[in-house]
Image: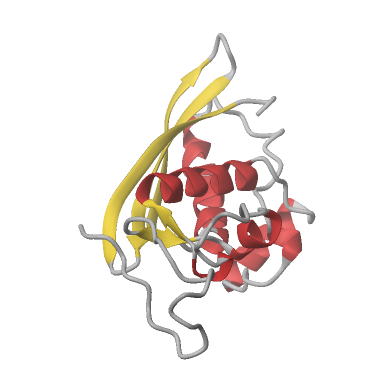
Length: 174
């Protein structure tokens, strides 16, 4: 993979401090990161066109999923399930996160698919950089009350797609 080349802009002169070095192929920085991160003044890359490297993009996706999985929806589970069935989950901040798992019996493998679907739906809805998402609960550790989950999908890198996966430990405290 080669480096990205800045696109010539009719609005910027060639010697503008807003044009300059670009990082290697990765993905665009999410808008919230652009708004909350102060780029150093020595950077020649304008914030609006900054591109994550592959490693930065992967770390950003994991971080966003971590935030998502640590947030709880603000409505009762029955209403949440009804909204999921109508497939109208986009645009409601009350739906950001996953339902409260406090009543979830992790030792009952029969319920794993339902709760994995809740996590999968949250990721599909709120992390658009990851497509073909799959969530599988793998193992329950009774001694530590932790369930191990495996998340996988494909990451979109500008014009390329690459498999992406990682494991997650789900516990009462995390």
